[in-house]
Amino acid sequence: MKNPRFIISGGGTGGHIYPAVAIANELKNRFPDAEFLFVGAKDKMEMQKVPQAGYAIKGLWISGIQRKLTLDNAMFPLKLASSMWNSFKIIKSFKPDVVIGTGGFASGAVLKAASMLNIPTVIQEQNSYPGITNKLLAKRANKICVAYENLERFFPKDKMILTGNPVRQDLINEASKSEAIAYFNLDANKKTLLVLGGSLGARRINQLIEKELDFLLSQNIQIIWQCGKLYLNDYSKYTEKDNVQVVAFIDRMDLVYAAADVVISRSGASSVSELCIVGKPTIFIPSPNVAEDHQTKNAKAISDKNGAILIKESELETQFETIFSDLISNESKKSELSQNIKKLAKPNATKDIVEEIIKLIK
Image (cartoon, rainbow, N blue to C red; front, side):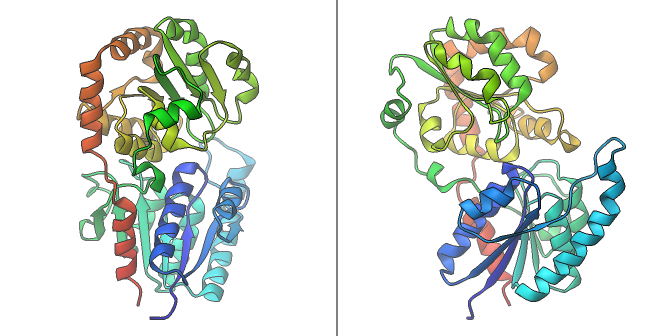
């Protein structure tokens, strides 16, 4: 078989980029001589993250439609035309065997162009409620790899495969708690709260932790608080407090999960999939500001099976302290949540997705 060639497109947020890189890494394991090209949106984080992972990337001039009237919206038809034109050019010159999309507007243009050129396409949908791009692409896609059940109302049933979401390979093998405690310089006799706001940080979660910091520390815990690079200047001063570490970004997710006794997190698809694998008692605070409110739907899919606690932003003032103090001191509740969320994990997701991609290579 000749060396296969793959175009992979996905971006805008870490939730679209990390699955794309995980799929590329697994394909590379199977086909060491394969050729890869990523396609992203010119001014988004994939333009840094993908080269850091060792892959070439081309940027399209594209952005989503804003919900209000903006200059960007007026430019949308022009950006779309430019992206489609460039997608055709990229595909014709690279000649991929399969084109894979993990979401975001750039992947929409690339997969649309590929299907018009009769090149097999695979969609990887991370959320329990698909975004507009993937819903539009579904009719022409060859395979749709999904992470949640009951998506028949959005996608053709015969194309869907329940695979789960790709997660970082290092999370599959559990890191040791003692190594984690040493790495983050933690106190082995205190419980650890891990606060995650996603790759960019979460303003409302940061505000909550700031307001509740004294209450949290009164529970005799220590905190690793990932506030996001946008917010580091506002919150880094709290590192001066005992038992608080404030960081923009965490490189060793395997170790930070191993250290954590309880997690407070947004419920983007990647975070949810990772937390299922590591099986930590979690309070999800979904972002209400994302398309189709999919974070609430992701969190609800877990909390409905008693695998996590969901608190809406609007309920934080009235419910947070009661829920947190009950959870941190209740060993049986923690262990119940932990066992239930683990049942929803799909540790072989990346391999299963790659199996579907390989079937399409002509």
